[in-house]
Image (tube, rainbow, N blue to C red; front, side, top):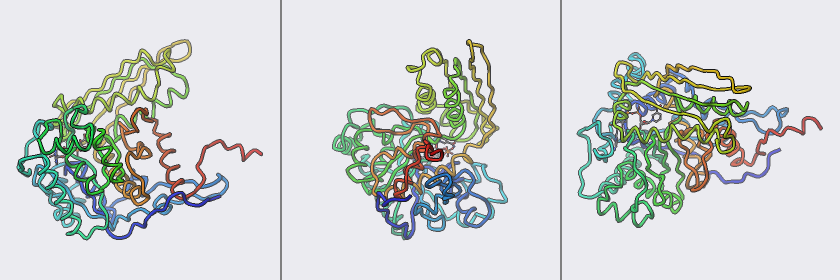
Length: 439
Ligand SMILES: NC(=O)c1ccc[n+]([C@@H]2O[C@H](COP(=O)([O-])OP(=O)(O)OC[C@H]3O[C@@H](n4cnc5c(N)ncnc54)[C@H](O)[C@@H]3O)[C@@H](O)[C@H]2O)c1
């Protein structure tokens, strides 16, 4: 039985501009994919917004609309794309270089893709050490850079006739850093921008520019970015939804499928060794220990949170968990991830599981980018602001309110996401109690 909608959602009229810092493998695969789907050249496999459904009411009610028909999402025909990168390659050249998609498909998309040329980036070699490119902004202070980005955003909106915008970071992984004094308040952050504080990273300058202009922001990489009191406060003050961080795609996606299963059956774990080879530019950047440290943090935290060793010390407190990433150019974007899992069962008897996932990183990430931008736009039209925990489903390191531990179990995350959609539309939340079927 539906009730009154809990929230008023403004309609998705006009164009939605998608702004992406970083035009690498993920971004070019995402944009090319949207253009391909629009032309009937492929299907949006992996995208919940395009293919998913949501059950409403009782199991016997037979009400299972598609998500995109249940909530008002921007249609693919109404998306426009703008990017920034340190390299000058347009989306066609970037996609050709990334070698994720086949030539014949790309050739059919040459016209729309070559029209998307990256704007000059805000870049700092101290934060991404293994690459360098010519397409960068010059400015005396970080505040000048932020203002230049805001000008890019306004120009993009006007030139493309957009009604609304969303920004998603698909740039390289920045080196690991912790919130510093400059990140403690909006005032301190703005002062730091004017004084070129070394603790402010490029991704934070993009995020600041977005939040100042009330553009929702998602972080696809493990960088600190909006995970600071200053930018969280700005998001809330300006009533902008944000989410992050680090797309949950290959190996960690597998972990969040398996680990809840082991825990559900009270099976023990004493070792999980994960190693990867990948040869794309992301792999090259992750060769730098600073960038790898950012990645390692989000990858390692997942198991601890899911297994709760404090509640189940006998099963999980001796877990040895290691994650390695090796840059191996011959494989390009076609990553291979191995997992060796040492589990134990009844009376402590040991068993082993081996996974060899021959995956395609950007093929897995592209539909996540699409879902995130459409859901963030929906969140903004629904008046939601600050951290959007219901979008944890998409991330290795979900952002949460300070002091709250993140939920990593993908099935709980999916339930949370769908319940949020039901809540938005005033539908009953589904608890799976199900006693009513037996009354
Ligand atoms: N593909 C996946 O499955 C996956 C999963 C989780 C996270 N990620 C993250 O997503 C991001 C993108 O991945 P990718 O495979 O497309 O990497 P990529 O190296 O192909 O693309 C990143 C692009 O960002 C650009 N860049 C770096 N700093 C920039 C800046 N300050 N401003 C503008 N552009 C900048 C680089 O020049 C590069 O072209 C990476 O951080 C990666 O770790 C990817």
